[in-house]
Image 1 (cartoon, helix red, strand yellow):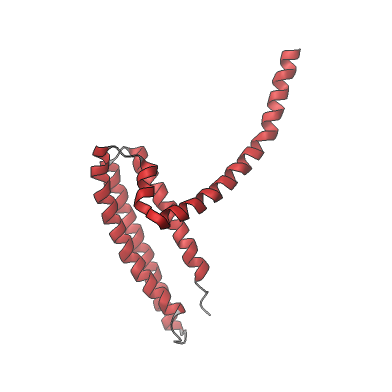
Image 2 (cartoon, rainbow, N blue to C red; image 1 turned 30 degrees about the horizontal axis):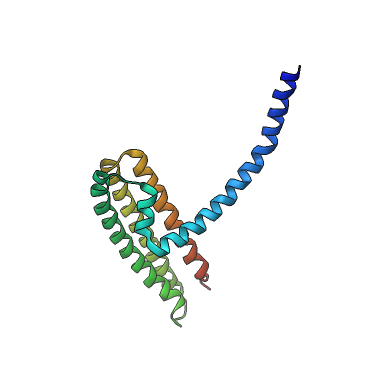
Length: 159
């Protein structure tokens, strides 16, 4: 009887504690994204290295792929920045054709980024163990999400 009561108590406690644990995890995720933002701003490469924990052989294959991807991202980011400056930084009236042109350019930068990410994935899956490759892809996705949030936060809507 005491054993059944103890098991029942443990189940009830687990049921009550589980939502609290998930809430704590959600707070940890927000904190992690803030930590991610800080770490990336100080030294993205060092942060990536600390998360991936690559062997020497893996590092030899990974870093050239990483550098190539970062160059592709930089090109897409420069193109996106030019389009954003057009929206924010000029006193030019926002006509329909001008708005269409800017929207097309912003979509083109997104497509360039997606193409670079597909190339990255293909190369990583051949160069690294799949779990490490997936971990990096996830990490890079989070980094890009933080950057996209910062851009969205600063960019006013077209009037």
